[in-house]
Length: 308
Image (cartoon, rainbow, N blue to C red; front, side, top):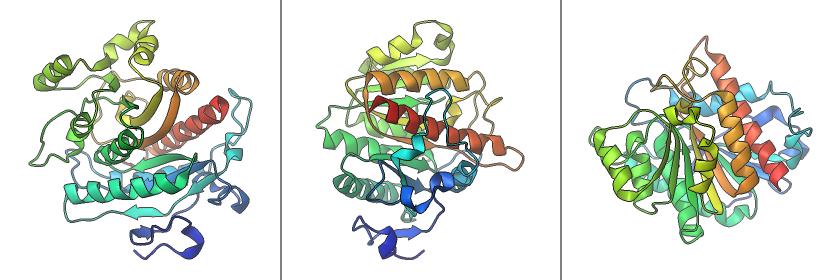
């Protein structure tokens, strides 16, 4: 890894280690500059605590490569969302001194990034889900707690510790819970009895996957959210029949249209301040998963531009 070059460093963040990557959507230069971009993509290829399938460190690169083949016109929105401008930062090389050190480093960088980003919308690309506590808590601090965390996921990720660390991907929402109880989780279908008891104790809003067969599940999701929302989207939210390339797949997950309906509603009805998409573990022969993750991000950009 090498320091961030001057041409890619409008942020004053060169003390961190970076690696060059391609631009999301393979956009022309006039749509990728920091000065003109409304959206910033931050690749975070971090993987240290995956507990079954591995490969999430390759997720950001696979998403960016797949994004080159997305059609820019969105027929649902009748617009080309890329025109907002998308600046793709080089991939962040986090500390290997241990999970706690890595996440603390990311949290400090994300705070710095928010300071200079202004009203630019930052989307993080994981990497494993443990990275999501950094942007979530940075936004909680920035807005004085006036932000809801919307989690799309198969798992609650509310364990206190897992595999001898509190910074495991299975503990990410427990770390967020130390800063706010304003967490809404959607698509959950795998948790421990201890996590279920914690949900009841803290009165957290959870839309379990089996409850998504009810007509009012999106209304329930929205009712649990405040005005400002940060989205963390673990791709194992999806049923593995649709999205197999992830480390801890669970049957019975959400569909593409479940995700689109929920995201459209939250961007329309709330102020979404930022997002991340995590846990893609690319597999040979399962390239459709990487494309789906890239298209998911592009749809978020589309919903964002429509809402603004």
